[in-house]
Length: 184
Image 1 (cartoon, helix red, strand yellow):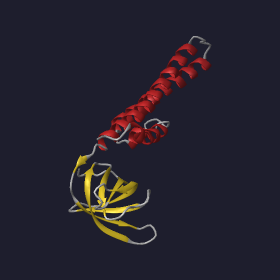
Image 2 (cartoon, helix red, strand yellow; image 1 turned 180 degrees about the vertical axis):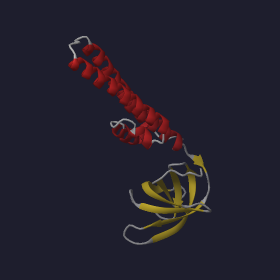
Image 3 (cartoon, helix red, strand yellow; image 1 turned 120 degrees about the horizontal axis):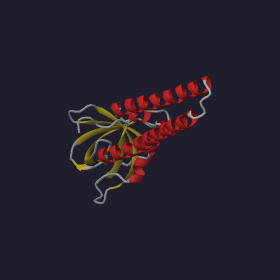
Image 4 (cartoon, one colour; image 1 turned 135 degrees about the vertical axis):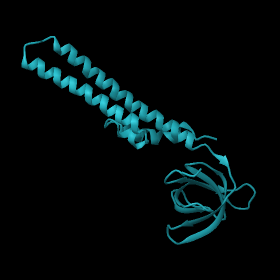
């Protein structure tokens, strides 16, 4: 099951905010070609606007103001399109990465909030961005965890939700990884 649009919007909002500086939202999404293309296009359009302004003020050509306005409008259109693209591609990528797959793996979890806690748990499902764990105890939301999968590097995670399992054998704990899993 893929995450909902609402759960991915905050990532899109962050990318759109970064994209207010041309190309930065795409660089964050690792869309380097699109980021460089955005920066280059906006730079060339701005150069034309400034060049036409210099020509207009250096001579008495009043007809250049319409051309300058046209280039300025196209600059704003490209900039707005890049902000929207950064927003929508971030949400789309987050939904693809968040698709859960039923996987049963043994994991070691450790919490370091007020006291040291370490336990064994199992995964119920797993995605690049999070997991549902079957743990022996529940955790409050936003508890920072360290999760070690068998044969994989240690991952930092944050508890999103926790509730008792329906069969009474443990608790279900939803976690979000600090960095997406690469080996998934």
